[in-house]
Length: 282
Image (cartoon, rainbow, N blue to C red; front, top):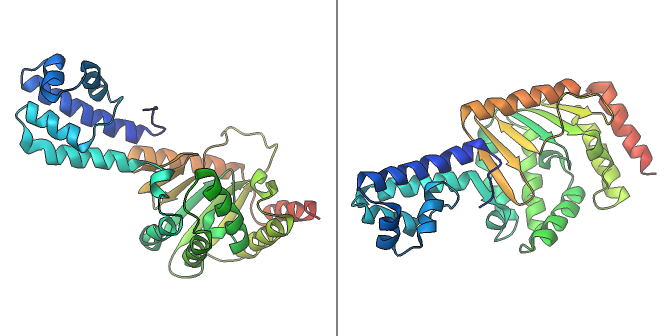
């Protein structure tokens, strides 16, 4: 198992590993005793106790039974699943296509009052046009080899995006200038997307900032992340989605967003960068 990109995930894994180790020690068992009782190689016991290998539900049941602590299995399995949900591979989230993933986030979006979004690669989903979303989700489907339900996924994404025009929500969005220059789909698709960004900037609920290329910066470019009401953060990696809920770590992402926001331009200056990106397409 590779190192987790979030200390929250690693902390949850390590806490579970330590609880399993304590059960073994309380039972007066050595690592070899545990391996023998569970029918494993001794190296597996070591990997589980150091957090290098995530145990399955059956592994936990076997561990607890060997330690005479079967009554604790349910709680440990629940803790294991919680840690697992913090780091979820896209292939699991997208195994039935992309539409359900779009729809699954609607409750979170509807209850969130303040969104803070930073994107260094593509236009944020909430601000995408149907054409841009179609081109992007088609590429994602092809790359990850997921079932092709792009048209349904786009419809779900566009419907979800209506939240920026209704309800008591506020959106602070930051994008790197390079996002405006990466052509997704075609020049016409990109021009339409940039025009849409110019339009949504006028919405009272939306604040759109652009971090200019070449600006002297004391905050490096980060992976795309979304902060929901200072309660949770979603971080998007190439192969997985990371959910951060530990308050100290959520606060750290908030601090990063403030630092990135200090580098961004808004209003007239942001419009100028958007307009220049449109002109470059012609």
